[in-house]
Structure formats: C-alpha cells, structure tokens
Amino acid sequence: MTQEQASVITIFGGSGDLARRKLYPALFQLYRHGILRDHFAVIGTARRPWSNEYYRDIIATSLEGEAGAVSDAVHAFASHFYYQSHDVTDADHYVTLRKLSSELDDRYQVGGNRLFYMAMAPRFFGIIASHIRSEHLLSANGYNRLVIEKPFGRDFASAKELNDSINAAFDEDQIYRIDHYLGKEMVQSLMAVRFANPMFKAVWNHDYIDNVQITLAEAVGVEERAGYYETAGALRDMVQNHIMQLIAYVAMPEPESLTPNAVHQAKRSILESLKPLTPEDAAENFVRGQYVGDTPDQPDYVQEEGVAADSKTETFVAGRIELTDSAWTGVPFYVRTGKHMTRKSTQITVNFKPTKQNIFAPVGCNELAANSLTIFVEPEEGYRLVINGKQLGQDFHIGQFPLNFRHDANAIANAPEAYEHLLQDALAGNQTNFTRWHELKATWQYVDKIRQAWDASDVMPTYKSGSMGPDAAAALLAKYGDHWSWDGSAND
Ligand code: NAD
Image 1: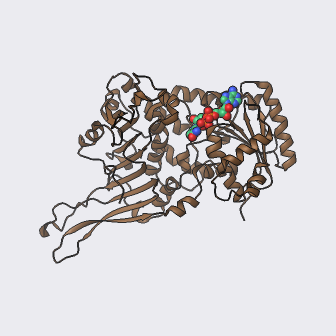
Image 2 (image 1 turned 90 degrees about the horizontal axis):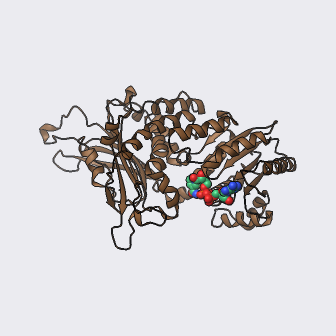
Image 3 (image 1 turned 45 degrees about the vertical axis):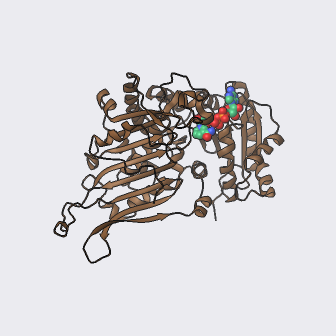
C-alpha cells in the first residue's frame, strides 16, 4: 500500500509556466497513485486576484491530456487547491498566508507539515525564505521543507549570497534544491548500471576507461526563453548543473549505502576533484559557439526576439574536463551541449581502452576496437554495449556488435516524470536527488573560470543550426587524438 504523504504545499508562483506545465500534472499523478490522498492542500500564490474557482479551472486545464485525468478525479483533486493573491515582497501578505495554511491544516488534518515550493524568478528566493521565517509560517509540530528551482545563482558569489540568505531561514536538511535531471529515470539508472553489475564495477576506472563523453543536445532554439537565456547562456544553463551532476554520477565511488548522506558524500568527492582550471586551461579546453540559421527561414541567434544584435551569449559549449580523483587520472570527460543541434538527445558514452593483449594479430586483426557503453537518457531511454566478436564466415575476422536495449514508448509514457519523482521525494523527506551546497560551490567555482576566460576574449565561433556545433568542438578532441563518438545521426 502506497504511503500517503500529508502536507500543506504552498507554491509561490502558482500562476506561472512551471507550475502549470510541470508541478500540477506531477501532483496529480501523485494523487492518482495515492501518495497524495485526503490529507493535503495546495495553496497557489501569485499577484493576480484570482478566486479559488478560477484557480481550480486553471488546475483542470493544466491536466488536459494527463493519464487518468477523468473529470471526477480532476474535480476531486482540484478541490484541494486554494488561491491566495500575494506579493512576495510584502511582509503583511504572509500573515494571510499563515492563517490560510493553519486553517487548511486543520481542515485536512495534515499534522503540521509544510512544503514551500519556490516556482518564481530566483531574485525572490531569498526574500521569500526570510519572510516565511519572520512571519512565522514555519510550523512547530510537523516538518518544514523548502523546494528551490534553478538557477541557483549565476556565479559562485551570487550562489553563495543566495545560499546564505536561505540558510538564515532554513537548515540544509530542510532545503531541496531542484536539478530536474536528477529526477530522470535514466539518470537514476546510472547508479544501478554501475553498482549492480560486477562486470562494470570491475573496470570502472582509468585502467580500463579511455574517455567519457556526455552530450545534451537540443534541437530547439531559445524560443520564448530568450530574455532569460541572454543572461545565462549554455554554460550556466546546462553545464554548471546538469552536466556536472551527470559527471558526478558517472565518476563517483560506490556510496556506502543509498542514504542521502552517503550518495552526496560520494558525489561531493568527485565534484571537489574537478581539476582546477588556469585561464590558459580554460581557454584551451572549452569551446563556445552561437547558432546561425542554415536556411533563410532560420534566424541566427542574434536575430531572435529579445536577443541583442551584438550578443556574446553562447548557445553551445564543448569542453574537456579532468578530475584529480585517483580513479580517474588521465581520463578526459568530454562534454557538449547546445541549442539547434542536429537532433535532441542526452546520452553518455563510456569508451573503454582496447585490450592490451592482441592474440588476433596473426590472423589479420591488428587493431582491435574498444568496447563502449552508451546510456541514452532522453528522449530514447536505454543502453548500448558494443562488444567485439567473430564475424560469421570461414575466416577469423573480428567485428563490432552492438547489444542494444531501449525502453519502449509505452513504458516511457507510463513512467513517472522527473517532477513527479522529485515532488514525491520532497514529500517523503528524501534529499538524495537534490543538490547540496558543496556541490554547487565546487561546480560554480569551476565554471566561473571558464566564464572569466571567455569574457576576456572576443572569439565566438558560429555553427549552423542543425549541426553538431562549431568545427572547434571537433578540433578540441582531435587535438588529443579523440573524436566525438556520436555524430548526431539517428542512434542505432
Ligand atoms: P513564470 O514567469 O511563468 O512565473 C512566475 C510566477 O511568479 C508567476 O506566477 C507570477 O505571477 C509570479 N510573481 C512574479 N512576481 C511576483 C511577486 N512580486 N509576488 C508574487 N508572485 C509573483 O516563471 P516560470 O517559467 O514558471 O519559472 C519559475 C521558476 O522555475 C524560475 O526559477 C525558473 O528558472 C524555473 N524553471 C522554470 C522552467 C520552466 O519550464 N518554466 C524550467 C526549469 C526551471
């Protein structure tokens, strides 16, 4: 029997895009599966003067197309939602919110649990946290948890300032910082692949691994997010958070257990072993790029609405990252991410070293190919392991054979979405799939060095929309005798 989680959930930014597209559908799925049942209420806040009825219509609309969203279920679910017009900068408004929270706590017999979700622009995070404390919204007889959306700062200094302001009101074990990649099925599967398979555990180090490649390719451009993207760029938007978290999961030592502390300790040891970059290293090992239209109907990045004509914001990053952890000496982690790339795909390839002993040379196999393991994170979800074997035939010729598995579309559609996993974890008090301050500190300090090197230079290579990035991204690997394992074509 699924354990019901009782809570009064307050969503700051309840009329926003994230709440409508991600949070309400995820909460509905939790309701459908009995994790939210009778003892919960959701307070949506934003500045607009909405009624509860209007808000519940918004909730119902946001669930259109969701599995199980038949009208009775939607109606029953939406009846737990309450709207409170609220300016987060106005301390008085928190008093109304406190009264409503405790009234709903009584009505739904929640037992004092409070989950505060900040689905708003990051500049408000600090002030909301401090008002929650100063205006006594924290409950004395249940838990108090704060869920924070990304971006968490735009460099180390601003992340620290934000962290300090949140820490003034909440303890670290009450803070749930979202990196939604950690809610993805295939990211969570990385631990299973690594630690449930002796065949991988035995070879997961620099003796056997030649390089690791991580690609987060998007087919779309900036679309309606240009205003935000202009101030962020691919480095801040994707590398500091998602790519660094993937590196941590690929490289971390086996944690002692699955407890949040053990997993975070293992991840921390890797992120704190990012090899510090000198300005020269940063300039040498990181490439940026900006897309330009490949056909007349495709705009260049600088022609997008909301983008400055002389913008120096990168829409693509490729880099070579090294770790000082002794398990990974000499193993480069090649990473890249960009908009308007050939096709959407997040994938991780571990390229092993070829076998040192080749007994097949006398029968003409001078070069033996290396094994590789690819983990497809999205939109395809699955694995490909490439092994060597004998080709059928009279002669002894060795060929490469991919062992492929993909979850089918139906299974993917029925699996929980990232926000569903993360909201369930936050309600259950499991911090494993949220980021801790030490991880953010290490990754921002690393990324700041790249930013500084780029800010000191005018070089901004371009790449054609629909390609795999600027030529410099291929040249970066070629310099080290490597190449990108995935060329952007459909995965076999
Ligand atoms: P949004 O602009 O759509 O929504 C912002 C919300 O804040 C609205 O409900 C607005 O009414 C409210 N608001 C603004 N000023 C206010 C004030 N002074 N007092 C009270 N309410 C106020 O933003 P969004 O896209 O929903 O993003 C919210 C957060 O989630 C951001 O931190 C964003 O970076 C993050 N995020 C969003 C997405 C996404 O897909 N939308 C994805 C990842 C992360």
